[in-house]
Amino acid sequence: MAIKPSDTEWSLCVAGPDGNFPANPVFNRLETIVGSSLSGVADSIVSETRRKGRTNAGQRLVNPRVEGTLNTEFTYGDAAVKLLLESAFSGKFDANGRMLAGTTETELCFQRVWIDGSTSYFTRQYGCMVSELAINAEAGGIVTADYTVLGRGTMPVTAANGTQLASATAELDGATYVEASTNEKFAGPDVKNITIAGLGTVDYQTLNFTLTQDRAAQTMLGSAYARGIGTAGKSGEIVVTFYRADLAPEKLIKNGIENPAVDISFDYVIGGEGYRFSTKAQPSFPEDNEDGANQMVTVTFVPVGYEVDGQPTDYVIQEL
Image (tube, rainbow, N blue to C red; front, side, top):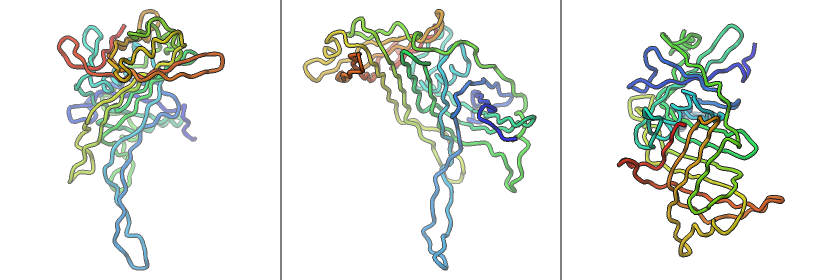
């Protein structure tokens, strides 16, 4: 039989202290959109020496790492989603369901199961962090959440002599599973309570949120694998498109060029449950767009740092 995209399952767990799979891992299943992929990659270096007969002297693979994106539909009450959000924002949800973006990293391990009839094949990546989170919402669609991942390495499926390892077709010792949430996925009508200081009451058509962590694998001499994942900085933006009501978007820009930060918050919520995102962000100049019968305007906001309860942050995520 041939393995089909619908015959694969993703799950993830918190990595152990060394970034690898912990003993008795607790895997949280993650529902993904077809096309999601995490793969081992490397850089190739080609020898510049010359051989007899103009033949190639070969190449070597260096800087192995894990790269890819898990495409999902945003939901709530899901253990895997919470771990991915913690990794993306470098924060931790507290006992009250609040997370401040900061510098507390969450390393993750991923497992993909490929099912071929009665046989299951496993690929596993370790030492992973979310390097980019993109949550996109439009009035007439499902809210998507795409997690771009960078990791230290992929567990081998073959021994040095090419023999397939037993782990390639077996569960890890002591592995248990938490099923994915069966809650509804957020859709356009569930993106509510959008509040952007200075814009007043307007009707929004799209809200796209992007957070990027400038991460890189830290390679070292004497090892085929990275020693860890480093982070140089963080950037983000919130892009909203709404129906033109007045000149409030232009008034966000002061003295012709100044763009002071404004308070922004919005909810993804179904039946009172979900997430609230809050930040302070600086606006761009508004861009007009005539979309058929609709007069639209788009503004991009770039979050800035501020303090919450004495802690520096640029985003607050609250479970509802």
